[in-house]
Image (cartoon, rainbow, N blue to C red; front, side, top):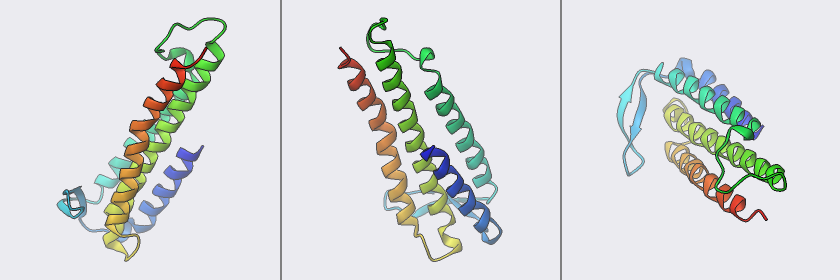
Length: 146
């Protein structure tokens, strides 16, 4: 649910600022400054990718029986493993949405004074940490299931 709220917020920002955009940054260097530019419709492609990835993680979160597990699934541990795996996919979706929200904020920041591109970059980095941490935490929690 959180991931879809973030998607809605990012889509609203994009659609509200879309008419004011010319070329948009498509790549940011290590300093956080844009170093490549592209057409504004590239953000619509990004939005479509965002929806697709979030739909995929949502589907996987709801179908834990499709997942691979780091330990044998038995009748005794099945419910807990499925719960932990579903949580892991849900938090991965939140991380992905945070990354994309940061990208949208950074790419559209030239159309208004706030938020800045560096804020967008910071949000994207926080999302990336969550995308990387969710599987690690999820796997560790599944390995600890008795």
